[in-house]
Length: 229
Image (cartoon, rainbow, N blue to C red; front, side, top):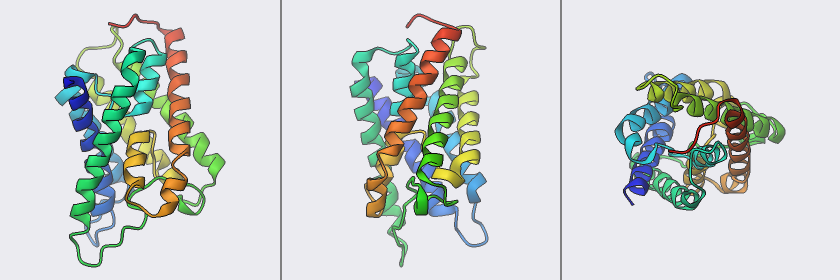
């Protein structure tokens, strides 16, 4: 239960910090943080929570990460559904807090609410196939970094930095394409509050990250296998 609570809190913080920066700060006149600021915010949420609760739950905060670690032989299959449930609920809790903060501003319009999308709902107008490829590849690389940084042969104490910075880089690359998911819990949480199109397109932001993560788990298991602790 402590592991699930840690996953809940970590995912809540990821959504509140990352999506919150996009909804509340990115477009603020004069002081807006822009895409780069949002990318950094997402990276900082993961970096801080890795050090805060990583020793409790392993700091997944993302169903795709849990699937990738399972495929890589680092995570027990029986824990997949409980972890995913905690992550999705934590994400929704973070989005709920963000919703009540955002709607406290007079005239606020929900719109996309930092949701992920493709086609006309892609920030750069990218189509479904570009979005699918982007999410698969970005999640693949994210898991390669996670599996490498947390390997028993990796330098101790630096995993949080590598993982947080990689998520920042991923956002710098892919925000224009999909608004960056690589995390089904993050996508689901925002779709609950956004316009109807976000829920209609949510399938891609479950399928693509999980495919990318499982592929990375299998590849890294081949490159440098390690028995589950």
